[in-house]
Structures are given as structure tokens and as C-alpha cells.
Image: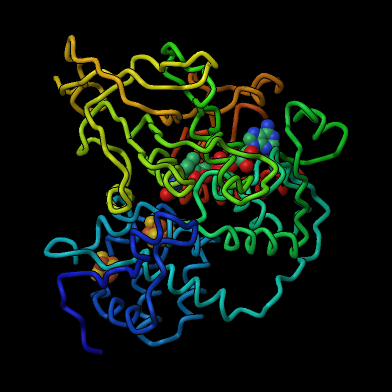
Length: 465
Ligand code: FAD
Ligand code: SF4
Ligand code: SF4
């Protein structure tokens, strides 16, 4: 086979920025077969494959890329699927630049192999050609409850169902998928992809009980004592929003990013006649500089805002959002107001947002995170004319489960304490994903769900002996 020694990755085809800024269709349209073959030929098939160790679930990257070169796309899919149950999702949303691609040797002199793009190609090819229906395995008579239908819970459920467990997922919202359906917008991750995974789980016999807030409708103790579950996995995420505690945060027109995104994505507020509307805003400020802030800003633009500002207290270099998301947001016309921090949200006589007072910042000495600390510039306050403010400054796990579960230890900030197999301080109770780590990534949540499924299997089998 002839290698492709181009220093550049095959670019990802995308919708034109001017067009996509007004629709919710997927921005990146995916490699064609020709592009995938050309990109796959850039992989050197390194013996020590550093890329594999940098993937949180250790996908055998050179092996699946080799299958692409051979045009055996289903074979490539099966290799990925051995360790990842959500390749169509991870190929789209993994921060590859800090994971697998960050360690690719082709990245030393030039751009790394487009591993994520190839993973997406393979997963989409499989989904387009797959006619197989998931088979319901024979039951082993043991029951496991999963709290939360995000990537950690779905993965844990899938692995346990394959091993013969009777699995029930309890999900607080009316739809399964966690952040994949309520947070990440359709234009980055089409919801049909997530639904296919949920349908597969259900075909394997997994029960999905929606509108079930554990800690309110039922407690973990009741799951054990009244419903006979042998073990419980908590994958309840970190969905509790933080606010800045500045004056004006309770005005109409101030949202947390979670509420704003849930209304837009899950409740389809952008569709005319939606049951859960969202305010039509002209000028929107998003406070924060992470991926969530970029998603909220790009949604606000698509909902029809004329001006959308990202207000962030550090500089662009310090922004935690992925470069690709920052670039996409800029191309679409989002205005970046870095080195600025809100001090007050101003309201009109109807208690509706009419502006946001900010102060300019400059960077001082590095803080505990190693990033230079933003410091206020005295007397530099100014007002931005906005009628909507979205706070996107982080989230933490909701304390509901902790407060209703005897003997479940948590960190001060709310994270459930669990070892690398998900074992918590309470026998039979396992946990993983954002509920344990705080806001992280889809693939790390999935990895935690996998590790916990293995540990739950071992726990139940050892008790059954
Ligand atoms: P979640 O996905 O949060 O799922 C938890 C589920 O538990 C939710 O459905 C919730 O409703 C349910 N739940 C909570 N409490 C209860 C209860 N008491 N009873 C029953 N159910 C309950 N990561 C990436 O890798 N790439 C990205 O591009 C990316 N973009 C993101 C964009 C946004 C807007 C957000 C918010 C996050 C993003 N992330 C991204 C992070 C990633 O989505 C999360 O790390 C991941 O979803 C965590 O998975 P999880 O299973 O732990 O929790
Ligand atoms: Fe890379 Fe994510 Fe795929 Fe792992 S799952 S190979 S980190 S894109
Ligand atoms: Fe291929 Fe890069 Fe991995 Fe080497 S490090 S095997 S070139 S993807």
C-alpha cells in the first residue's frame, strides 16, 4: 500500500458558515469514502502506537485504520466496537486533539492522522448498512438498576445486558441520552444517532423508565429493599448549574446554560409551536469560555439573535473550549469579548434584562490551575446592550442522591467518591462519569460505565457463590 505523506489532514467538509448559522442541521457533513481512504493512508501503523494509550478506552486505532485501507469498513467498526459502544458519538465530539490525535506521531511534523474523523466515517458507514437487530441475551436472573441515561449509564447498561443481567435505567428526564440529548446541540450531534443506541439497548431487553427522579420518586434503598435489585450504578452526571452571585441574576432573561440548551435541544424550542418556548432575543451574552458556552452561543444565533457575545474573563488562549468549536463559532459570527467579566445584570421596569455591566480584566500571576489569574482593571466598567444572559461557568453533581442515600460518601464539591472500578462507600452501589469526576468528557464517562459494569458483574457473581 502506498502511504500518504501529506503533512495536512483531509479537511472535514462543513456547511457554509452563513447558511449553517441559520439552521440546526449538522455542521460537519463527514468524510466521503475517497477522503477516508486518503486519510487512512496517512497512518504509519506504528508498532508502539502511542495514539492507543491516549484514548481513554484504548481503541486499537492502527488496526481499525488498516481495515479502512483494506476497504473492510464493517471489520473496522467491529474493532472499534470491541472497546467503545458509542463510536458515532465519540467520532464527532471527542476532544481528539488532547486525546488520541494529541499523541499521533504524524503530529510531530505536520497534522496528526484524523482519527476521530475516520472513526465517525466507519460508524456512519455501519449505521447506514446495518440491518441486524440486537438479540436479547438469556437472563441470568439478577437485576441491576442504573440511575441516569447518559453515556456512563447507557454503556454500563449495555455491557450488563450483554452479560445476561435484567437492567432497568431510571432517567429523570422524559428522554434517554443525558447530555447527548439535552446539552450537545443537534448541529454537532444528530439526536437520531443517540436514539439508535437507546433502541439497541431496548432490543436487548434493557428497560428505560423515564420521568423517574431517583431520590424523589424512589430512593436507592427502595430499589434494593422493595424492588429486589442486586446492585445500583449511579450515572447521574453533573447537571447542577453554577451562578456568579452578582446582582440581577434573577431577572427574566437570565438562564443557566443547561436550561437554555435543554429548552433548545431537548424541548425543540426552535421549532414553531413547541410546548416549551424560549425567549426570542436580539442581543445575547454568554458568560464563560468552555464548550458549553460555545454551544449556547451558536444555539442563540440559530434561534435568531442579531448579536451574540462570548464574555470571558481570561484571554482566548486560556479558553477551555476546543479550538474547532471556537473557530466554528467565529466563522458563524459570534463576537468574542475576552478579558471582560460581568459585575451586574441590569433590568428594566418589567424586571427584564436590559444590559450587562462588565469590567475589563488583565492577566496577572499564574493561579493554582497554572493559568494566569485575571485581575480587574479599576474604573474600566462598561455596559453591553443585551436582552438575554446565559451563565455558562460550570456545573456540579446534584446533591439529591447523596442526601437521600445512607452511607454514600461524596467530595466537598458534591462528586461521589468511587474507586477506579466505580465502587462507592456503600456496598452494591457503584458510580461513574461526571457524577464522580465533575464535568468531563463523553468517552471518559463511557469508560467509567464499562469499568463499573465489569465490577458489578464480579460483585454479583461473587455474592451468588
Ligand atoms: P450525563 O450525560 O450528564 O447524564 C446523566 C443523566 O442522569 C441525565 O440524563 C440526567 O437527567 C440523569 N439524572 C440526573 N439525576 C438523576 C436522578 N436523581 N434520577 C434519575 N436520573 C437522573 N464532552 C465531550 O467529550 N465532547 C463534547 O463536545 C462535549 N460537549 C458538551 C456540551 C455540553 C453542552 C455539555 C453540558 C457537556 C459536554 N460534554 C462534552 C461533556 C459530556 O457530555 C459529559 O461529560 C458526559 O455526558 C457525562 O456523561 P454522564 O453519563 O456521566 O452524565
Ligand atoms: Fe480518539 Fe475518542 Fe475515538 Fe478514543 S474514542 S480513538 S479518544 S476519537
Ligand atoms: Fe497511526 Fe498516528 Fe497511531 Fe502511528 S500514532 S499508529 S500514525 S494513528
